[in-house]
Image 1 (tube, rainbow, N blue to C red):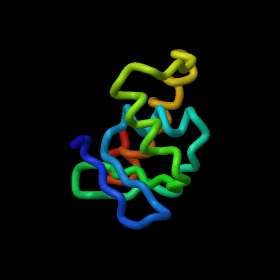
Image 2 (image 1 turned 60 degrees about the vertical axis):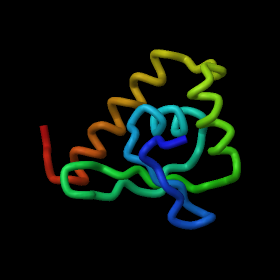
Image 3 (image 1 turned 45 degrees about the vertical axis):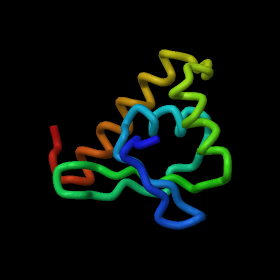
Length: 89
């Protein structure tokens, strides 16, 4: 499964996918930081062992998340990503 993410260590999970990031944040996976990679933000989460299952459930349409809260989380992450790359909109 290729989803633009890689695990830099056993304790961290990185992804450029803002939609997966919003889901992880909404499911209480701690966001450690947002890094800049040129024109993209990279979201770095603490890897607690549940992320692989959550990502699989995401792609298999098995998650149930409050859509309003998910959208608010997405907007917040988008602002953080733009801030990390120096693009304040």
